[in-house]
Amino acid sequence: MELPVELQSLLALGVASLVTFVLTQLAKFGFDFSGYKSQLVAALVSAVIVVVNALLAKIPADFSGIVTAAFQVLVIVLGAFGIHGLYKQVKK
Image: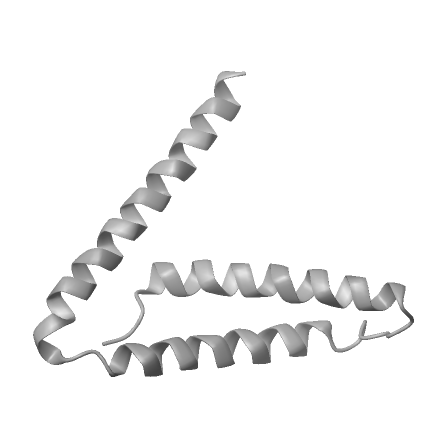
């Protein structure tokens, strides 16, 4: 079992935003990672996805259908929030 592609993309976006924020804050203290920002983001995103997939691999085969259904519901709910936010933005 592995994380669905939609959630992998969402997780990658969240990790990339967090790493960029941390590196920006570190730049205020004199640490300059400007040339390595994209490499750090790519490495950390890959590491997080591998760890999450390794944890999902420990789920017994009997429960894989339940977990897959839960992930599908999560993707649908997050998509609905996105569409609602877009609708509110366009309506203004």
